[in-house]
Length: 192
Image (tube, rainbow, N blue to C red; front, side):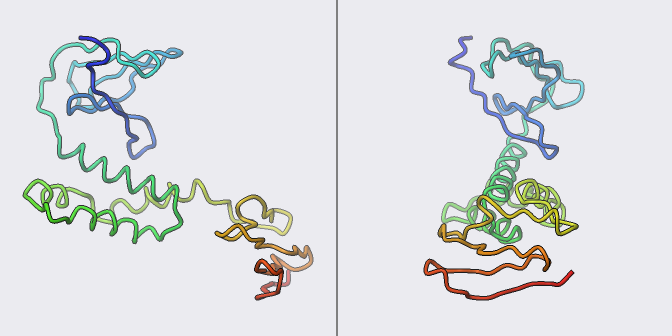
């Protein structure tokens, strides 16, 4: 079988590790050696393995001793989209969850889509994963005045205007907000 004919894609599992998907089956990394990765079927006691070189499959062995779970792969895709949005957006996480479910409810509603929606974990069961994804991209909250460092994207509004005009080290996070005209909109500070 030529490499071009092998349909593979990757996604990340709930632990943040990369999985490989081939022909409706999910594989997890068993061993890595440089640019080579050796994958095994994620179902216990299944003998099928895949070898990749620079993420290009070079060898697929044996036949699976179980059926593929296409529905779980679809659920994983929906959850992956939610995680990506949690990482890239500041939309509230419950809203992201609801919006992704609403996207599935189209005019093409059928038994497969209903089964997919029924198999998606409830928000309480997957919210920790989504909040952890969001947390990785947000700065750590400071414990002391010395730890306050507002720079980069955090010093500008979503339109790119200056957000922080002054930083008073005597007051805890004394921030002045400004528009393009550099006028004072509000001032907030907490004395240490």
